[in-house]
Image 1: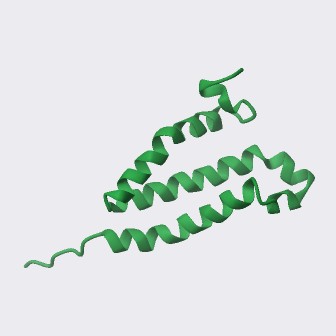
Image 2: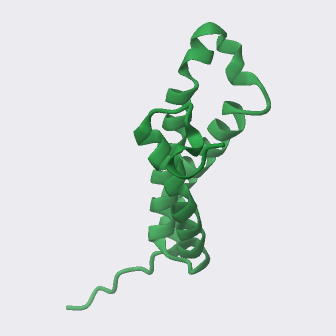
Image 3: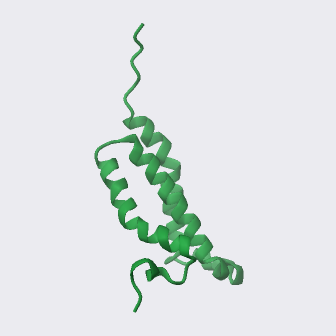
Length: 105
């Protein structure tokens, strides 16, 4: 039985630390988005980009052996599609929740 930082023993140590760090990062993104803060959009974008990259690094050997492995409905496909959605919508969401600057002379 493994737990803590080594719960993801299949991944390199920096990625294990990141995956465990998602326990704090994901709720933080949710809170910032719920409070309608642009920082929530940008943090979500960064976390999701790192998550997609970390999952691809971790599963690289599977992809090398069988490139169609990416298309399976469980695994990298939903992570990648959700990542594309989050990353592509982060700038419009951040703009929508940022109050316009006042132009005072």
